[in-house]
Length: 251
Image (tube, rainbow, N blue to C red; front, side, top):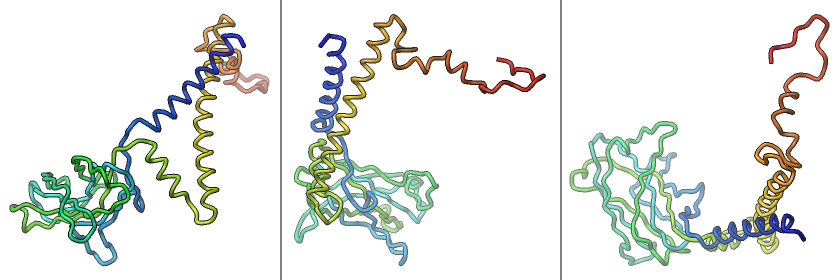
């Protein structure tokens, strides 16, 4: 195999390995699973809103929660304390986070495209995977008489793709033949990585072919001649000849 044919294979293989390695070993922030992506604490049918909720955590290192706070009294600023504790009898707070937010930012009447969530970060909770936690907010002394409620909660962990893939495969959709569903999911993920490598190798081959033909590979190549500007210029006008006496449109 010549060097010009070997290089696209090497580039495609290296790209696929980098994609798989980065997705599996590079840590990133991921949202913990919940219905609709968040845990709702509001009961709109009965008009009940509370100041806390219980959230399931899928991944380790819980480190961030987003709170949909809604205020019903006008005040310049809300001082609140966020309490995080395991949802087991007799548990104590594992994180206590003071937060100060502007009253206008948590006013209950939100715009159609407004982001209603207030971001709260704290030191990671290492053993959070598979646990449930109670999230509760408490207003400060100057806001004791103000009405502030919590509509919903989103939680985030910082983990690697290996943890995400393991949780994704473990909760394969469907109740019938779960092993088959897991095998299909893994096969699709492997096919996605392989397709990325094949595409990268193909692009490399086209660039090399363009250089070998003495043409600018950014404009045309052996397989890309059909997309040059010259052919596009000829395709702009109908192939059917114009009727007698008609004038051609200016080019």
